[in-house]
Image 1: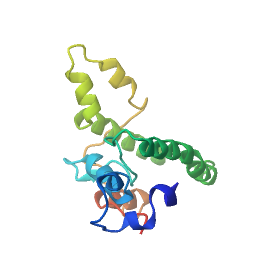
Image 2: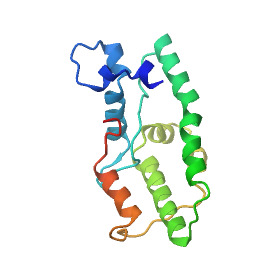
Image 3: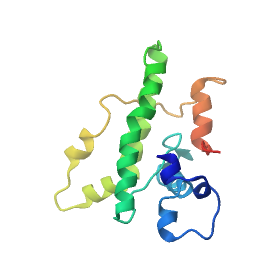
Length: 166
């Protein structure tokens, strides 16, 4: 998928790209992801990276791209699950997971344009929005991770995203 849809030249600054090529540019989709999934009140991004392509033109090329993203998901995700699936964790790690899930809900309720649209209708779908929330979340007032912890490392990345392709 990467070489087909994100050839090396699409990752560089190339003013000669057509609008269609720019739409399928990794650099543009990464930028869109970083800009959209952002919690301005916290100066924090919602995740460690990704691509966002919500507004692509409906073309055969786009359909091929979306299909390839979908088909590439499991082969890229399963090795992570296999590596980390049996890692032990305790109450602290579970609480951290719930805090991150709280950030997900915070983003959805305050900033997500789909949720805003759904709630602004004459017949708002409140249940549909709330059912999409994680079953367990947590919020701690002014939570600061322990210095040197993996949680602190993650927060640094969320505050200053990394271009993982470089």
